[in-house]
Image 1 (cartoon, rainbow, N blue to C red):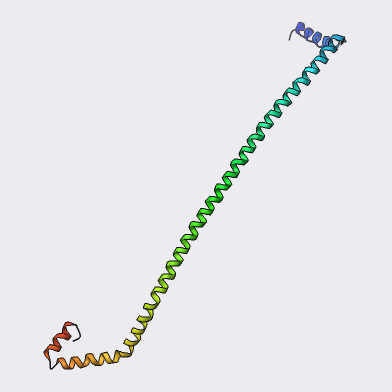
Image 2: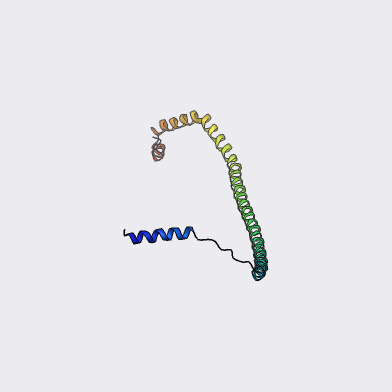
Length: 154
């Protein structure tokens, strides 16, 4: 670096450190401007506050609308739950009635079938004896033999 550049840098550094601060006079006009500025800022702050209050009122209105919509939605959900519960109850009662009706309808037939089975069980030996009698009769009577063959008893 050349000597002239070094000298310029040193001069700049020393000149900035030895500069003296000068006092700036504060006049009555400056005070009046500050007072007017404060008044203007206060008015501006008040107008901004009024605008925010207006926005707050709008938000309160929107909140009320949302609450009304939420109440309607809750009512619709409760109505839907009621409809589903009613439908479920009707289906359950219908199925229960069908099962009860079938059981009460089948019971008399079951008792009749059981009585017939018992009677057949009692007369089984008699039936075997009767069939044996017809087989022995079929040896002498061709009509009986023909009938027994027709029913696969011979």
